[in-house]
Amino acid sequence: MTATILDGKATLATIKTELAERVRALAERGITPGLGTVLVGDDPASTWYVNAKHKDCAEIGVASIQRHLPASATQAEVEAVIDELNADPACTGFLVQQPTGLDDSAILARVDPAKDVDGLNPVNLGNLVLGIPAPLPCTPMGVVELCRRYDIPLKGAEVVIIGRGITVGRPLGLILTRRSENATVTSCHTGTRDLAAHTRRADVVVAAAGVHNILTPDMVKPGAAVFDVGVSRVAGEDGKSRVAGDIHPAVMEVAGWMTPNPGGVGPMTRALLLRNVVESAERAASA
Ligand SMILES: Nc1nc(=O)c2c([nH]1)NC[C@@H]1CN(c3ccc(C(=O)N[C@@H](CCC(=O)O)C(=O)O)cc3)C=[N+]21
Image (cartoon, rainbow, N blue to C red):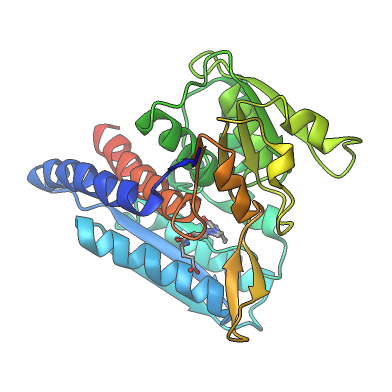
């Protein structure tokens, strides 16, 4: 057997077409959604991600507001930019690209929860715990969206999440245990005694540990759906570094569904960011 590819790139394109329609409807009411990004420093990967997000926005009619601060920027300087974007009516949603090298928790907390298109502000994470509708984190929702579009059953499914980080593992567990998803979730992490014993029982495995090839074929139940959220960099054959994931390529032979990496969860993160941007503008319009 070889797994069905969960094509994040193609799904991003489909979601863009759907969102462009909603942006047109907002334009008829005189509203243009605007995504703000704050980039601190010149890390090449962060620069690429931020540019990709603005390119996505341009394609669907969302305006861009870009703030670039030097690597030497202080916490107070970043917070001043956040205050400015919180107050700017043209900016309907924004994010501060992580990591900044500064106090990222304080940065997330300073963003107006209504403009928090990352869904990582403490108020919005609290709303997720409480079951109150609010913007949801983009990468976890990207995984859920792929399950919906490829008919991967979640109700009653055994889901193993490897990693408990704030941006993926922790919120994904909260999302999948909602009544609307109704999955049974096991959270695995560095304290897990026998990772393979858990993953072998799973219908769905989400690898979000940031450990290259942490999931190997012997750890996967035949037919399971596997999601590779890892973004490590390894040396390629040409000596240049390339993106490499948490899932060993040979898992393809065992799994029922698998995300390529790149081309899987990464583009879905951008798709769900766009959806959060459009939805924050829709909410602001009806407030
Ligand atoms: N405030 C904040 N919000 C974020 O959403 C955020 C962040 N900080 N910091 C860094 C991570 C990482 N992230 C990615 C987005 C898109 C791809 C993506 O589109 N990747 C492509 C290309 C990968 C490549 O070739 O470099 C792919 O997987 O096909 C990957 C990773 C968003 N992040």
